[in-house]
Image (cartoon, rainbow, N blue to C red; front, side, top):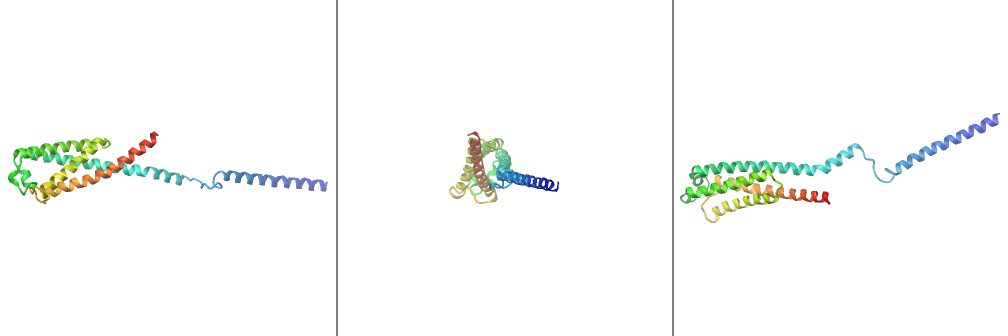
Length: 200
C-alpha cells in the first residue's frame, strides 16, 4: 500500500510540474508576438501621445490661418475707413500721406485713391472669408505688394511723400501682411499635399 501511494504521489507531482511548464510556455508564446518580438507594449499614454503628435501640426496651421483671416478683416475695415475719408475731403491725403507735394493732391486724385483703396478692401475681405481659394489668395497678396511698391516709389523715386507716421503705417501694414501671407501660403501648400495623399 505504501509503495502504491508513493507511486501515485510521484505521478501527481510529475503532472503538476508538466502543467506549470505548459503554462509558462504559453505565457512566453504570448509575449513572443509582442514584447519578445521587439515591439514595446502600447499603453494608453503612448496612444494619446501619438494622436497629439499627429494632429498638432494641423492645429497650428488652423490657428495661424484664423489669425491671418482676422488680420485681413481688420486691414479691410481700416481701408474702408480710408476710402470714406478720401471721398469726403482730399485734404486727408495731402496732410497724412503726400506731405512732400501737397499741391499735387486734388479731388480727382483723392477719389481715384479712394476707389483703389475700396477695391483692395473688398478683395482682402473676400480672401478672409474664403482663405483657401488659391486664386483669390494670390490676388490679395499682390494687392499688398502693389501698395508697398506704390508708397516706396512715392517716397524714394517721385518724392511726393516723406517717411512720416502716415506713410510708415501703410508700409508696415503691407510688409507684415506680405510676410504673414507668405507663411500662410506654405501652410496651404502643406494642406493641399496632405489632401492629395489621402485621396491617393
